[in-house]
Amino acid sequence: MDETRTQVAIIGAGPAGMLLSHLLAAEGVDSVVVETRSEEYVASRIRAGILEQSTVDLLRGSGLAERLEDEGDRHRGIYLQWPEERHHLDFEKLTGRSVWVYGQTEVQKDLVAARKADDQAVFYEIDDTTLDDVETDRPSVTFTDADGAPHRVVADVVAGCDGTFGPSRAAVPEGERSTWEKVYPYSWLGVLADVAPSTDELIYAWHPDGFALHSMRSETVSRLYLQVPNDTPVEEWSDDRIWESLATRLGHGQDGWTLTPGPITEKSVLPMRSFVQTPMRHGRLFLAGDAAHIVPPTGAKGLNLAVSDVGLLAPALVALLQTGDSALADAYSDTALRRVWRCTHFSWWMTTMLHQSGDPFDRQLQLSQLRWVTGSDAGATGLAENYAGLPLGY
Ligand SMILES: Cc1cc2nc3c(=O)[nH]c(=O)nc-3n(C[C@H](O)[C@H](O)[C@H](O)COP(=O)(O)OP(=O)(O)OC[C@H]3O[C@@H](n4cnc5c(N)ncnc54)[C@H](O)[C@@H]3O)c2cc1C
Image (spheres, rainbow, N blue to C red):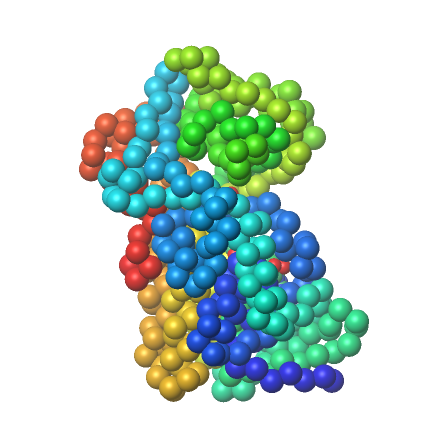
């Protein structure tokens, strides 16, 4: 079997894995990345689109923000609305922090370009990924490479950045891991449309028919979401039905605001789930990003949490591998989980405030909460602080 020796074996070439590789390389720590999908597939997955302040700061600090500065769209805040009322929350005014619209596809392209420029070893299109000896100081990852040959990467540390479906999470023995999960009784139908956004900043809309969100990817591409029942077949939603429902829920015609429809280029149904597995470290295996936690997308936290995990993990591994100082590595799981649970709560809170659960009592509480959040500086600041993102060390 072919064998490669490195300091950090990284499973998963998504944002968590590639950013970790980049941050480690900047400090002289060597890594090998392994990934089941092709480079093109990973780079074209339509997912998150909002970067919080800490993410942007970290990308800037690590030389990854050149295109983000040019092409990203900085937003001061968001709109929150319910029928007949729309309110703007100005995060900059409330907290001095803002958010950027810049798609995960673009973040991924920037990461891939930076790693390529550095001749990073990435094995794409691999199979049969297995983690071994993670409780020793010589853990390894074995896999079948793209040519069908078996391969082993022997390392000092394994970083499990392999998302929801990867094997790293389950490599923590059952008796040593705890999991928490909440499945929501609704999903999002998400569409991409080749039409200029009808709004300057995101609109989060509470509506008796169900939640709707008007987001965007660029000056010419809109990203829109509708709350739908779980297991909704995407074929049930024709383009006309989608635009009609968006117009109703987003308040087309209200105070002169109009929603401009356009050609829909992508449609998919996204189930909503909260999930956390603890601890985020077992022996020489460290988990980061969706491998350890999943949030419903309402708070725009998934990608940002992957970045903040890695922002904490990279210096911990550098200290461990270069000087033998294990303090940060030992603290990694607890430090990362503090922020993970904060974001898990915020994502749950935004989700349950804005979606129809079918319970009339919930509706009254949601409207009361929305009125408070939009009418009180204290309420608005709490939302703004969480949405624009707490500092990395929170
Ligand atoms: C459909 C979808 C829509 C989303 N929409 C939003 C959104 O609108 N807003 C938001 O904030 N967040 C959204 N998210 C969440 C956000 O995209 C994730 O939180 C983010 O991608 C996490 O990055 P990651 O690197 O941890 O995981 P991933 O991006 O999932 O990367 C993990 C990588 O590991 C690879 N992998 C898996 N198994 C193996 C294996 N056995 N061996 C090797 N490699 C493996 C995968 O192919 C993948 O490339 C969405 C997620 C999904 C799935």
